[in-house]
Length: 210
Image (cartoon, rainbow, N blue to C red; front, side):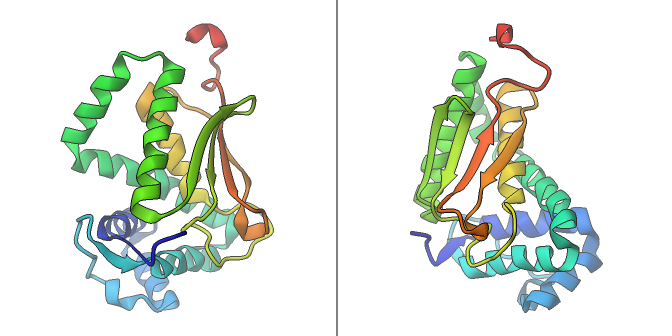
């Protein structure tokens, strides 16, 4: 079950990336629309203390969807997911070095298995997302049985664009290759789980690349 509060750093990094992508005026318009003006020029601290309501994070995502529509939100949130991971890595160089050394000695597929397994464990610990990672014939699969990206939201199609962008950047960082990442199931449209599938092979690379 999702925790009521999320780490301050998640909201901090998301606000930072959204400001980069939609600009100061766009960010302020979204904060005003969602009733989150308390974050205007007042980002939460960049720490891991659980100081932000998870409902505020989801309200922010819902505001992006309402203002820009699903098509516009897809691009914005996908970029935010990718850029957010980059910023987290830039802010945690020690972690980058520690994880990176362990990954370098592994084959490409094992790198993905390792990094996404660690990611699921971290999400479950910090957010209570009840997330599961496994490998199937589809590829590398992440299932979120509880999801901050779409909790309480309704849509006609998958809308966890930020998670898709995040996973795409994680895969690129771990392997140096771009992977196709798709959300095939989403709780916002009535599915029981949000299901993200990362292609088994990098784009334009065949299995001989292992």
